[in-house]
Amino acid sequence: MILEAVDLKKTFRDRRSGTVEAVRGVNLALPDRGEIFGFLGPNGAGKTTTVRMLSTLTPPTSGRITVVGCELPKETRRARERIGYVSQAGGVDDGMPVRDNLMLQARISGMGVTAARQSGDRLLEAFDLVEVANRAGQTLSGGQRRRLALALGLVHRPELLFLDEPTLGLDPTARIALWDEVRALRAADTTVFLTTHYLDEADALCDRVAIIDRGVIVAEGSPDDLKRTVSGDVVTVRLDEADTERATAVVGDLPFVREVRVETRGVRCYVDNGGDAVPAVLRALEGHDIPVRSMSVESSSLDDVFLKQTGRSLREQPTTAVAGPVAATAGQGR
Ligand SMILES: Nc1ncnc2c1ncn2[C@@H]1O[C@H](COP(=O)(O)OP(=O)(O)OP(=O)(O)O)[C@@H](O)[C@H]1O
Picture 1 (cartoon, rainbow, N blue to C red):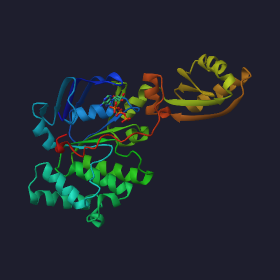
Picture 2 (cartoon, rainbow, N blue to C red; picture 1 turned 45 degrees about the vertical axis):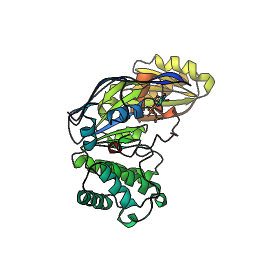
Picture 3 (spheres, helix red, strand yellow; picture 1 turned 90 degrees about the vertical axis):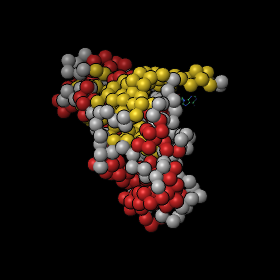
Picture 4 (cartoon, protein in one colour; picture 1 turned 30 degrees about the vertical axis):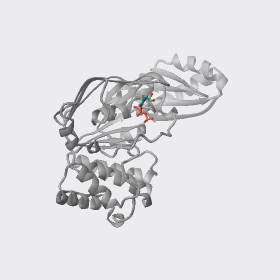
């Protein structure tokens, strides 16, 4: 078992906001090496808090954690030698050259000088940072900085790497490049546990996903399995706002519509076959004199899974996140 968490809870007690139950009984099991596991959820769901507990940085209020064969908190030191953690802010020292950033991190993680240098050189090469190796951290582009943060998490060759929102704020090209880096890690048998609130990221990159909301896991499985739990296609009908309620009743009565969700100026119908459903939905609405502005058909997405479990959409969440506290890797002993 690479990672196991049983009934993990974290309650913050804060003078201003009172008691915050950030994580309320999370169970996780990652049995195999070389898996990309996604922890998906909206802002404030408890993703960072969970990852910080799993990576030894925050003690849980209660619950049991075993990572890479080490029981926490008893075997924290041994665990830190074998796991890596890259925070939302990354752990790049702005004033220090790229190569020295890597060297320092490797040394902090307990590596000897020669091994540290070798590992640093290998990562500079692997992450296309050779040309900027002697430049200070502050001169790097967003993509280079994120690659250096990833390299810092990997310099001590961990078996398990935690990435907190690895592609937050990256442009689409840099995002795809980072996905490729993460896939290469999996190919090299490293287990990657990443948090994200991007649905497409979880879908495209992860072998398995757990969806967390308000401190509890509401669904877990491969993206395909999860999507199969909501019926095949989603037909979205755009309407005048005044017609939405009547339209919900009309399409809700159609025998092939499994579920209807109301949206502002429209409805979403969950059906087996979108192609067959579109003309029938249109006929039914027109039969009740409800004008249809537009219609579209999509396969169900992870957002539909979230919607089904929570009644809310992940897409409607604000996407600007505040960078978390700076902690480059677990090896820093924070
Ligand atoms: N040190 C703290 N003291 C008090 N409350 C906290 C603390 N850290 C986190 N919280 C609260 O715990 C909850 C979960 O926060 P957490 O950062 O784990 O969520 P998240 O899913 O990672 O969100 P985001 O995507 O915005 O980073 C939030 O309500 C947050 O305000």
